[in-house]
Length: 269
Image (cartoon, rainbow, N blue to C red):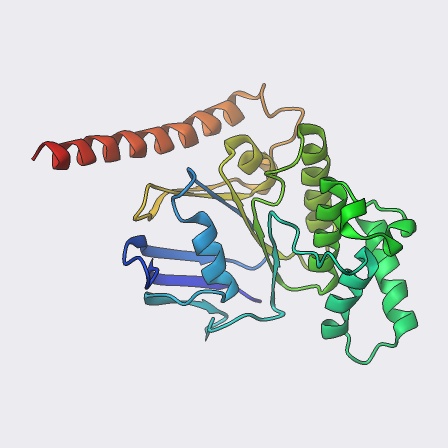
């Protein structure tokens, strides 16, 4: 089922010594779309790297179906903000390289066919197969990165502010595309999506986790029932949606004020 369990997780970088995350406890069922929301510098990306197995917990642990995460795995795909494409390889070669790991017995023809199918699935023409990343727009490069992530078909997908550097129109298009890819799967992936944008979190997620200021812990855990899913049509008009939006913003602002008061008190003392 690939349920994810985070137990008593704390983390600090060895070189800095500063505590980044503290006492994180979270259970996520398979198939949930979880947005990790919070201000810049609160540890959202660090938590994602821990989920990916790219960093190790200082205390506590992360398990998937009871198995502790101790390193990177094809069970967990990652989409970064910087696209993660090798610049010396064509878009097609980048995607094919990932597919080789997932389908080691497939020959070149089969891999190419799968790559072109993936390009089509993310709305790209097959001509992109032969183009280098420098020839693609930011939105096209991010579509290729998403094609790679969905191509290796991991049950858990980790997305680190993947649309943060894109213009508003392209960002909206890719938000819709990811949501449709997730909704249309027979067995939905578990997605962890990092963002600092409240509206993006409300549009995409069926569960929103808010991290407070560093050292971060969870200050809000909001679940959105399937029948209450938010759409672009009701995002800024439905009173229930506006209530959720205001609640999330209040949690973030309240936490910021608390830390300002605390830091000021320490400074005066």
